[in-house]
Amino acid sequence: MSGRAIWLADERPLFAFLERRLRAPMLEPVLLAPLREFLARPGKQLRAQLVQLSWDLAGGHGDLPPELPMALELLHAGSLIVDDLEDGAVERRGSPALHLLTGLPVALNAGNWLYFAALELLDALPLDDHRGVLVHRRAHAQLARCHEGQALDVGVRISSVQQGEVEGLARAISERKTGGLSGLSASLAAICAGAGPSVEVALHEFGVSLGLALQILDDCSAISCEARHEKGREDLENERVTWAWALIARKLDGPSYRALLRAPSLPRLREVLGNDGHLLGRRELQTALESLRLALGSSAALDRAMTLSQLLEQSYA
Image 1: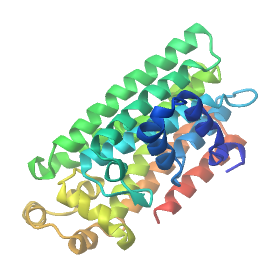
Image 2 (image 1 turned 120 degrees about the vertical axis):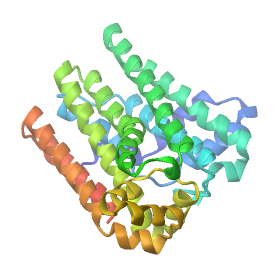
Image 3 (image 1 turned 135 degrees about the vertical axis):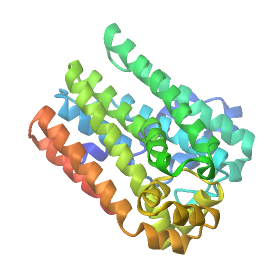
C-alpha cells in the first residue's frame, strides 16, 4: 500500500485528539491512560486503509479529511474492548485484554466512550449539511446493527443451532459486525468524496465483503493455526457460532456433526476443517474485487484494493 494509505501508522494525530479532548488531569488515570495504552498496540488498521482506498476509488480530491479514518479506528477499538469483556477474552493485540489491566468498570466505560468520541470526530468533517446528515445516519444505523450482531454472537450457542442453519447465522453475525463496520468505512469515504449513490453502494458492498472475508479467515485460522490455539479454545468454550463450525457443518453428515458438537476438540476440528476457511476467504475477496471492478472500472486505486486483499489473506496464511 502507498504511504498515504497507511498514514495512521503515525499515531500522533489520534493521540493529539485524545490529549485535547481529555485534558482534565483527573481523567488521565481512568480514561486517557488506558486508551493511550490500548490504541498504541499494533493492529492491521484495516479500516483506516479502507477509508483511504475508498476515498480514492470514489474520486476524492485532495487529502482525505483525517477525522474520518480516526473516527473509524476509534469505533473499531471501542468494539474490541467491549467484545473482550463480553467474551471473557484474556488477550488482545499481543497484550492482556484491557479489562484485565484496568478492571471491568474502567474498561467498559473506556470502550463506550470511544463510540461517542468517534461521532464527535464525524461532526468535525468539512461537509455540507446534506452529506453531514448522511454520514451520521449511516454511522448510527451501523452502530445499531453491530449491537444486533453482537447480541447473536454472545447470546446464541452453537449447540442450539440446527446444522443447516449454522452458515446463515455465521453470515448474519459477520455482516452486522466485521463486515458492517468495513462497509461503513467505505461508505463514509464515498460520501465525503462527493460520490453519488451508485458509487457509495458499490464501495459499501465491497467493504462488507472485505470484512466478511476477514471474519472467515480469523475464525478459521483460530482452529487451523497452532499459534492461535488460545483463540480457538476460547471460541469452543464459549460455544460461539463461527465460520469454522459453518464449514464443518457443510462437510459432515448429521450423526458425525452432532458427535463432534458434543465432544469438540481442536485437533479433530482442525482435521475436518482443513484448508476450507482459507479457500472460502480467498473466494470472498476475489468476488468482491470483481464486483468492484465491474461497478467502477479498472484504476490504480483498484490495483491497490487488490494489494490490500492479498495482504489481508497473507496475514492469516
